[in-house]
Length: 486
Ligand SMILES: *[C@@H]1O[C@H](CO)[C@@H](O)[C@H](O)[C@H]1NC(C)=O
Ligand SMILES: *[C@@H]1O[C@H](CO)[C@@H](O)[C@H](O)[C@H]1NC(C)=O
Ligand SMILES: *[C@@H]1O[C@H](CO)[C@@H](O)[C@H](O)[C@H]1NC(C)=O
Ligand SMILES: *[C@@H]1O[C@H](CO)[C@@H](O)[C@H](O)[C@H]1NC(C)=O
Ligand SMILES: *[C@@H]1O[C@H](CO)[C@@H](O)[C@H](O)[C@H]1NC(C)=O
Ligand SMILES: *[C@@H]1O[C@H](CO)[C@@H](O)[C@H](O)[C@H]1NC(C)=O
Ligand SMILES: *[C@@H]1O[C@H](CO)[C@@H](O)[C@H](O)[C@H]1NC(C)=O
Ligand SMILES: *[C@@H]1O[C@H](CO)[C@@H](O)[C@H](O)[C@H]1NC(C)=O
Ligand SMILES: CC(=O)N[C@H]1CO[C@H](CO)[C@@H](O)[C@@H]1O
Picture 1 (cartoon, rainbow, N blue to C red):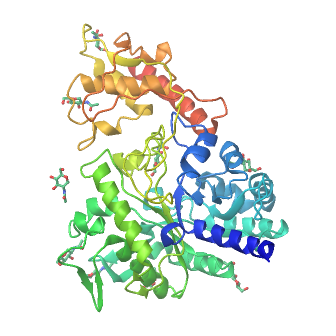
Picture 2: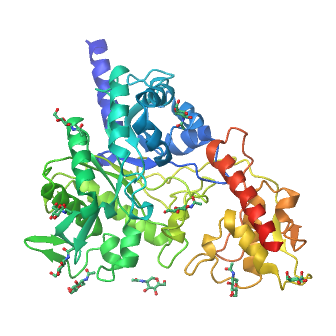
């Protein structure tokens, strides 16, 4: 009798541990666009597992990251980068080899020790973003269709779903009212095709939210509204009342879906978070309030006015770690969304799935030497601006922007800040602190108040795409710089 109960008890335990605190299906984005990425195995073993994270969303199919997730039981969304959509849309063969190389090889849904529980493939990453213009628009549906055919051939189509994460600018609203929202007119046809595709595959619509951008651009909606702090004056839209940005976004999408003829499509949130640097009100204190508010909101499972008791099926927080190589055309704060710093230390506390315990940090971080690069004050600095531009064109200077943690350090300390980030991103190489003889290597930490002068990480050679890309970018910017000087 006892032995007959054991598997049931185990199953119950598993189910309970799957859904900590009853919050439905919360996951976290994990990207690698860092000049000093932590080793993936450390991320899995010290951040994801001890903190009870059960789902991750990846921007691509980095082999090092996928291998580190093997046997972890963590549910995974594997991404296809926008720059691959064109090829995948034009060739069924390319789609088949993408699926073979990046999915079939790793897939397991039975917890096999060496397998990965891949649940979704994300075809493109916000391919319809206004900033991108129409460059990816013609390829998305065909790429998704070809990946779908390849999945079917690999006998995985009933285990893995296809999704296309969309930025919230795919719809437009009038006076912030959800009932007035509709998909952007020039996307109408593409959207109908996308919705038909998703519907055929029983896939959800994935919405990436950007509450911080909304806060900056929507003078009508308060900071409290964006941080889930009940406001005295909720926004009224017909019979619906809104007291937070999250529900407002969901219902704007619901309304757009209805107008396009897909009123009932499930919704999943692919990205939501609050940055901690690079702009006014991007602070750890606000991020903590935001995450707590989001957590309580999801836990209540109340849904939104247009979808009562039907919250998003899954929600992915943005993001696990700071990424200093992310594109900042959308805002200098973009690189500071990490719940953890680039070196794996929690910026604030929240419940990722670990319950009431504090978040587990990465221990024994493999830093480079205790060395920093600063500007040599004894030199003539009349031309130093060119060197700052050189440093900031590839290294991260976003904390120097107004409202950022290093905005107030003044000149020439801010020059040192730029020099140091460049030096660390280049693995503390001697040339990385040259700057036409204006740089100086020091062993005294120049950090000042809130402004942290970081030390980079010793990274293994396996660090992929972004490092090679960053090196290439540095070479290009050095040439451009040399050209300017000549
Ligand atoms: C995925 O598969 C394609 C096609 O085989 C390959 O070129 C690519 O490097 C793989 N990895 C990623 C991260 O896309
Ligand atoms: C950043 O994104 C914009 C489009 O949003 C693009 O024009 C630009 O080239 C990108 N920058 C880098 C460094 O990739
Ligand atoms: C927004 O509302 C105003 C006034 O009601 C109207 O003139 C305008 O055309 C609307 N714009 C859109 C995009 O619906
Ligand atoms: C802001 O609120 C006012 C008054 O409620 C309204 O007329 C206006 O259209 C709103 N603007 C935006 C951008 O939501
Ligand atoms: C796009 O669709 C909306 C309804 O969803 C409609 O009001 C609008 O006229 C359409 N625009 C075009 C250009 O088809
Ligand atoms: C969805 O399925 C229907 C019926 O099989 C088909 O006509 C339609 O083309 C499919 N849509 C897409 C985008 O694949
Ligand atoms: C600054 O740049 C100008 C023009 O390139 C050059 O003539 C000058 O000698 C430079 N000054 C120093 C101190 O390097
Ligand atoms: C450094 O500070 C000076 C003086 O406040 C300012 O003019 C300059 O733009 C700053 N440089 C950077 C890179 O932030
Ligand atoms: C809308 C709002 O609350 N803005 C705040 C952003 O942060 C600055 C500086 O802390 C405050 O002065 C603003 O009131």
